[in-house]
Length: 422
RNA sequence: GGAGAGGUGGCUGAGCGGUUGAAAGCGCCUGCCUCGAAAGCAGGUAACGGGGUUUCCUCGUUCGUGGGUUCAAAUCCCACCCUCUCCGCCA
Image (cartoon, rainbow, N blue to C red; front, top):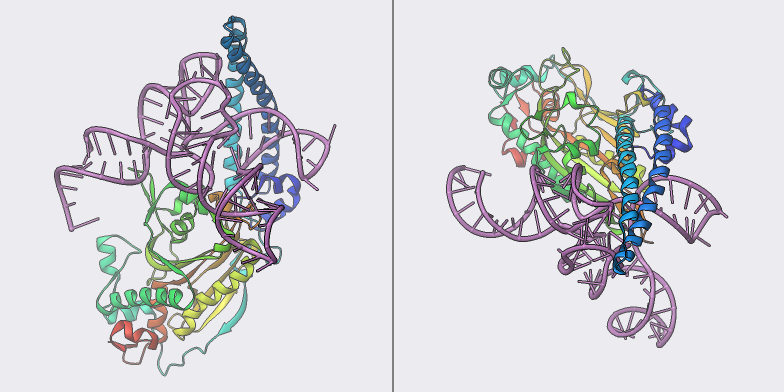
């Protein structure tokens, strides 16, 4: 959510930012009109309420001196009726204004390159040497099937398309990755581990920005109006919703594993093979709450933490910087580390690290008290560290051998109890 | 699922139709004291929104949420949500 004050004072700047995200800048004019109407209504109703408050005191005084109050009471009854009518209009206008404000995207940071789509993202740098094979490397779905560790047919039977079953060392590798990633972030990088609920309420989804605009991508329970997490970002960020933290407690750094559930509504026909685009996947997510003046520094740290996992696994990757058109709804700046998949001859997004500045903090009302006693919104950031299913796919493709077996990366051997999957 | 208790400021917790934006305590801030600190003493300390002569003044709203009664609601009534205790069920 943007501050109304910013929209009032710099409407053109806000419009430009919205346009850069390929959204509708006309919303700004609508907001300004409604804001004006709201303020006019408030002036009327507030002065009536002032009168009512004064009259109430007079009536109380009359009663105390046992005098007649009937004429004053009759007059105030009329005033109260007018207040009720105006209050109803204020309520409607407030709701409309709030709906509009919740539908406005965050503004891109001024340094983010303008661009229409992911085609205009830029590669910041590339790390690692691509593995050299004496044979044609296979995609992970072929390896997974021949090794008997990824079973897409079983997933389709028991759930539907875009579901899969892991078996044996495949299941163990997934579990090993989750444990190891969390251990790295906790032991080496100072994050606190969180294991949150997978089902969250409407307020939480609104707080991080999934609602109201992206309901189509979410799984929803009709009986009690709960939503399945599309990412641990949602429950973990909302951990501090409506809270006030102390400045000296910032930054607060959480890491959480959850399963993630996404309808992939707009992805028909895309990535239909393998396990890179599915309705349920595992992810280890890092979430930070920081002082506003430090948030871009903290974004660098977050990227280093996400990419550290790739480096420890010796997986080649590059860092992609999102242009304005590919930032998404809530981010002011975003980088996607993308891992090399030799079996598919392409890079695949494996993490996404964003600074939301105060956009989520405003929606979720997450504040901190400064050392001189004032209240201010924190900045929030999050990044995958990493998407676990895609990490497994990258390991299979990068560590495969001529006979179809897969070496286990060194750091995972203690977690796997073996150095080879065959 | 059944029975009961309860949701009040940064925190604990009083209040149960009008003088309560809300006692008291804790915390925090300022001053005195001190070489400095602690203790002690004195004072201050909610958020959000509107208006203005915009380091301040003023008005309004807010006591879980939403309705209702009333000239007037933290206080009375209704519904819902949440927490705690006990019972039932259950991994």
